[in-house]
Image (cartoon, rainbow, N blue to C red):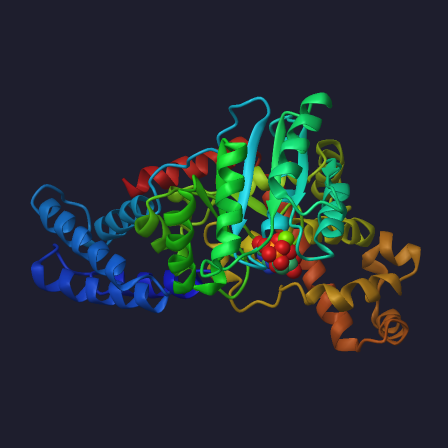
Length: 446
Ligand SMILES: Nc1nc2c(ncn2[C@@H]2O[C@H](COP(=O)(O)OP(=O)(O)OP(=O)(O)O)[C@@H](O)[C@H]2O)c(=O)[nH]1
Ligand SMILES: [Mg+2]
């Protein structure tokens, strides 16, 4: 996501390289490029224009005061303005209320049910809450079952009344049940609706009035681009929601919605969904998102996410093995399972500064795993624990056994080798060092 935008912005700053100072002329040229990059990334026209106007004003004002390189200064100004555009600071979800009541709203297929599960999972594991999911989608026959499966996968109870079509009644009964069971967060999943469907919009407005939620979230598919902004506006006019959840940011989205929604509805983006798995969700941090858009990487969120995923003890054992260069195909296989759980590997790697660009043309997308598992499965236990014995004839046998080609096996052996090296490097760098690096980078920008 945002790959194009970050490349384009970087190129526009290059125009300023070598220039001694920011002048009206060279800044105009850069900003024209920045604006074009934003428009191409599907940012609302008015938002893009006011953005570049503000940047220009700031850049011209700063000219006399500073002695830093113009391109650095511009990166800094654009970075800060991008963060500002997306709300400046992260806004946490409101957890007041006993129980806390959270209501989902949004179009069909936007990701409400999936996000309800992700939120329940996050509140349970990170905030040590005891959530309950409530099925208030009474229209789609399979909706209750879907929520039940989601609830089961994260170990959270699901309240439903299959024969009741009155969502206010269901919600009120659920809240009563939650109190009785000492659940402290009630997450209400609702049916998808179109803003033009008056009856459906009335239903959710009535539901909101009746249960008086602490938090009403509007869930929107980031891939819908400008439509996302318009839908957000229509739902906000009707529901006056508290925050936005941008889903499917892992997809082929140009990301413009993230940049425009906040300005158009003046409600904060609180979460982003980055995959179909229950773990694929992040709290939205405008400044970190700005880092990512500018290709600065996002070490902090990477560390946070990795920490959440990896079992600490298992990680320490693995670390020892890596340091001793004993990392083998058995470990590799279990890493693949971990990575699969974490979501898109390229997305994850792209958060490391410098890596995003380096791997742009490298073949480590999710598809890379398909043949890999087959190949590893065709290895003997000895080969798996002693990869160095895998010579040419063994490679031939493995290729045949796994239904792949010798080239595939060679490629995997090479990737495995590279991975071993990279892991050794990363493991040598502990978290506090990573934090220092992130802080140093921030300092550089100032
Ligand atoms: N790639 C990706 N897919 C997602 C994400 N969130 C949801 N999905 C997928 O989008 C589809 C729709 O998600 P749901 O959670 O069922 O959407 P919904 O809003 O509940 O849909 P309705 O109940 O029909 O209105 C499913 O296939 C999800 O797996 C995300 O962040 N990334
Ligand atoms: Mg649903």
